[in-house]
Amino acid sequence: MAGKRGALIVLEGVDKAGKTTQCHKLVQALQQSGRPAEMMRFPDRTTTIGQLIGAYLENRSELEDHTVHLLFSANRWELVPLMKRKLEQGTTLVVDRYAFSGVAFTSAKPAFSLDWCKQPDIGLPKPDLVMFLQLNPYEAALRGQFGKERYETGVFQGAVQEKFEQLMTDPSINWQVIDASQDIEDVHRGITEHSLKAMNAAQNLPLGEL
Ligand code: DGP
Image (cartoon, rainbow, N blue to C red; front, side, top):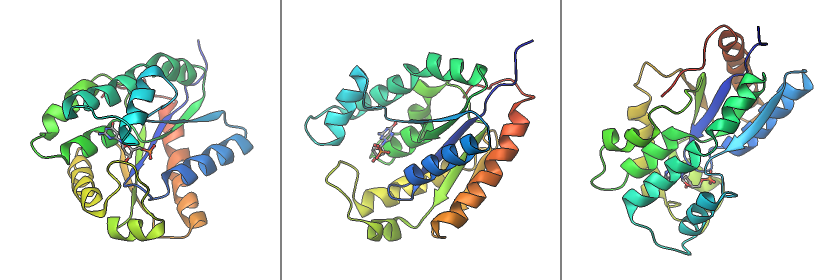
């Protein structure tokens, strides 16, 4: 019988909520306590598909909105074999954004339904835990200059936040809301607690599908 599987843990939230910092801190804390853990991030701009996405986000190229939605999803799918391998080997994956960003960002554009946006991600590995780093998008904008990337405007981020709130009503996902306006160490403590609980539970459950 194979060993215990790792957990799939996702951090979501609007831009500048602190997801990347917290992913690094969580991976470090888990590793230091002897639990195998690795970080992943989506979009993964290192693949061929990821480079197309990167050019689009940096406004170096234009892509039709449905097309880019499917590319973001394809970028997740192309990493699925690796994710499954790691999880089966007992490594917990801490993921900076996932399919929920995919749905929230595209459905915040005019004329995209939540339902259409969800379709390409159906069947992806289902996270054991999704933590939403809650921060007022206008407060987020004050944290640091929004950069020059596409989507980095207060108005768009406000629309994204609303879409996340709709997604968080889905009871089939283990959502936990974290107050990201607290200081870094307090946020980290909350995230670690939820993660340890989810990792314990995941050991006895098969990996699900979105
Ligand atoms: P990051 O590398 O985490 O800063 O994310 C890059 C930007 O892309 C950020 O504004 C969020 C957005 N984004 C992330 N995933 C998706 C997705 O699947 N679809 C769309 N449309 N946007 C996404």
